[in-house]
Structures are given as structure tokens and as C-alpha cells.
Image: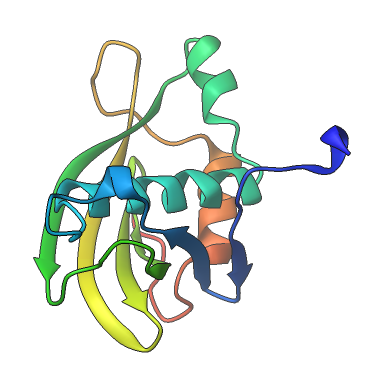
Amino acid sequence: MKDQMQPPSGRIEGSRHFYPVRVFFEDTDLSGIAYHANYLKWCERARSDILRLLGIDQRAANEAGEGFYAVSEAQIKWRRPARLDDVLLVETRATELRAASARMEQKVFRGEELLATVDIVAAFVAPDGRPKRQPDAWRQAFAEFAVPSDPVKE
């Protein structure tokens, strides 16, 4: 039984990734509304899941001294509050791929209702914190996931 249990995971369908989230008590304030910073956490989990599903081992790359992804830009628009026990879905699309970064559009839904939109740029950085070209295999994996109408940019 223990071997069968896995943490929550999302799935990639075409150029979209879907990641389910439940709003727990720890995610809310006294009124039962999800605290605003938790949207960033949920979106981060979704992006981490995308890397895993694409076969990108960020931990191994970091431990080998190659580098890692770090958020360099974030823009959030909250539309409706999430509440205690809500089941949410984070939808992610890679909308732009550059040599050292990827831009992703993320939307947080409760059913069909859009709660928030998040625009993130994740830059690949060397251990010293400077931008660095993404590994070719990683860029290729992102290129296969990226929105088809958006070309890979150098």
C-alpha cells in the first residue's frame, strides 16, 4: 500500500498543464478566504510538476552546479477569492521560450470560474545567480510543450 501512494500530480494535455489543488485551513485567513500569497505557492507547485513531467531534473542540475530556474518576473490579477475546502485547478501554458528563460501564463479556476491570472518569467540561472542559457534538452522539452503559435526565441 505504501508504495502505491504518490503526491498529487497534474497532467499535460497538448500545450496546457493542469494541476489540482485543495484549499486547506492553513491556506486561509480568519474569514476562510485563501491568503493572497498562496496563489503563488499553488502556481509554483504546478510549474515544478511541469518540469517533472517534461523529464527536467532541476534538483540534479543544481546539485551538479549547472544551475536552476528562478522567478524573475511575476504579475498577478486576483478576480475572485478562493475559500476553505474549494477544489481549484491551476492551468499553465508556456507562452514564450527564450535562450535563458520561459514565460508562463497561469490561471487558477474554481470549476469554470476564473479566480486569478498569473504571468511568470522563470529564468535559468547559474549557481552565482547570473542568467545562463538553458540546457538544450530542457529547451527542447519546453518547445514541445509551448503554445504552437509562439516560436522559440534566441
